[in-house]
Image 1 (cartoon, rainbow, N blue to C red):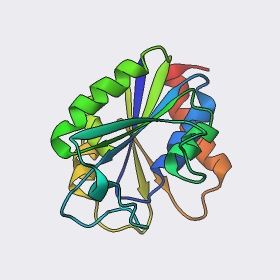
Image 2: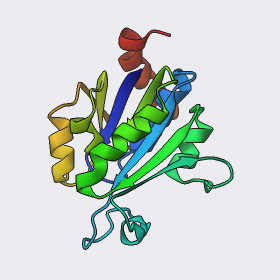
Image 3: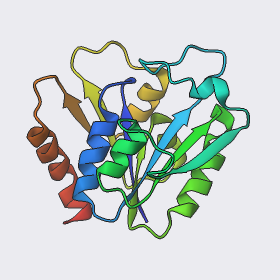
Image 4: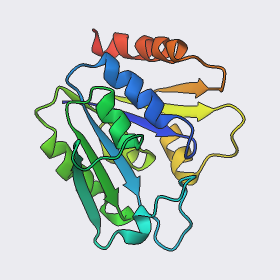
Length: 180
């Protein structure tokens, strides 16, 4: 199974957008959204998702389906982009590795998986690591700096960038490594 990790300089830079564009170009691939919970720290999500505050065990792995997903959530967008299966891993920092192993085992029948989340980058043997940045954003988080050091390539988004240009950028990255 091939693995592509999509990391980002901060929350809200466009990781899900890039992951969705890639999934549309990789038929049959699965997706894994990784959320590293930071109990006792403010939620980094712009809308305050409350996932970290409600996680009561080291990690939780959910397969997201039409029955349990909500429109416009990242996992919903990954499913809508054509992922064959979508899992969401929510984990305390010390349990991310265990959760990733379990998720990847569940997805082993897929030709590949697009993993969205910085914390996965140092823990999986990815075939490709893509760093997503957005013009005008502040300093990257510590996990983003670590992921950037392992990135094979970077996509820089801005407000004026069309969906077509994002698709072209992803195609230029994917074709040499994964063909059509």
